[in-house]
Length: 232
Length: 251
Ligand code: HEM
Ligand code: SF4
Ligand code: FES
Image (cartoon, rainbow over the protein chains, first blue to last red):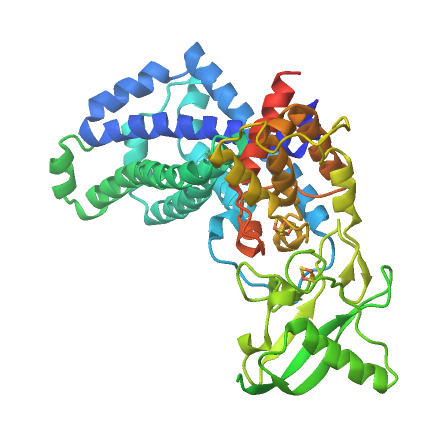
């Protein structure tokens, strides 16, 4: 089967799973931003998803995507290292046009997995998991307030999101190139579209984080009045 | 006239594919700037031979940038510091007096070292033999204008056909992937009516051969196109991916 034994097939699996994960992140970010405007609205979303069947199906689907993406990443990275050979160059230079991210996709991905683990522990384990076990899930807004009142969590989340930004600015156009929807003209366009969309995506996450941190730590009402709904 | 320079060469010496290699230093004195890099190595080899030492083995043939034989990895760049030029097109005026210049062979599992700076690139021939051709029935020579080809397609095919099969793309790639080479060879035919007939079979066969020979999978780092002496674009890789996926889906 070509998705297992050809290099382009394997890359296609990386590409499709990666793009699906980006799509998920877009939804996730949109829902997070509700917490900036209305705590009630955010609570409603938490309740709507909760441990209902569709949320469970979604979670399993996401876990599958993550596992496939990770396993293929490991597989490709190892075989690529083998193809490179044991002898390394004594002198190396990064040629012009080669992005930092493109050379470090696996390491960036590892940081993303570590961040994800922390995130699941901070939120998922206290919400959906509790509900699945028959308990009463934690309140989404309270969890945000608690987590982002701690500077070390904020710092770790920022590192995580930074790594994700690098991973996705390369990942986006790379995924499209892998599918083959690119040429000299579209390469430049996809790259721009990728940089803009991914930056907005990450800023969405960072916005919630920083607003809540400032609110909890410095009691800044500036941001909360700006958005109108913080932590009510 | 370019001025003369003196510099230290660090050259990879390795007696055979299985032997352990190491760097050897050579001091080069008063080399005119208009000496080509390969001529400079010729000067060194002559000295080595006169001293009864083994000359440095390196590949070369046309010395004018068209055959793709020369293949030196100079100061961290395949084909040295210039863009859009082969090793044989590099002149010593690019270097400074007192420099240390490190010369290594292409390093990739697909290209084992034969000796010193010469590597075995027969893998590329095997990929070509797997499908990099058009099967034609012999007969009379057709009229040149019998098959109209759009200018854009002809230009793109020519740009892909500029590939000289030197392997710098593999040497530059952190994944040891030969995708730029394979994509150029697939594209130069796939864009033309004569090549379209066998396009599906060709792309599958050439990619399968590349994978079989142990080259890596492309992660789109773009080191290949930056180092390619013929500036072959990664848009060819997108075409290869597109055609391969299309061919597999239509199976
Ligand atoms: C939210 C999580 C993630 C998203 C949205 C994501 C997205 C992407 C995308 C879009 C690509 C480009 C696919 C392509 O080049 O064809 C990609 C590639 C890659 N990802 Fe991820 N990824 C995520 C997590 C991870 C994780 C956890 C790892 C594991 C360490 C990882 C490792 C890689 C590697 C090694 C590549 C290959 C780079 C390449 O081939 O160009 N990613 N990812
Ligand atoms: S694509 Fe460029 S670097 Fe690769 S073999 Fe052809 S000419 Fe050499
Ligand atoms: S010797 Fe022919 S291209 Fe350099």
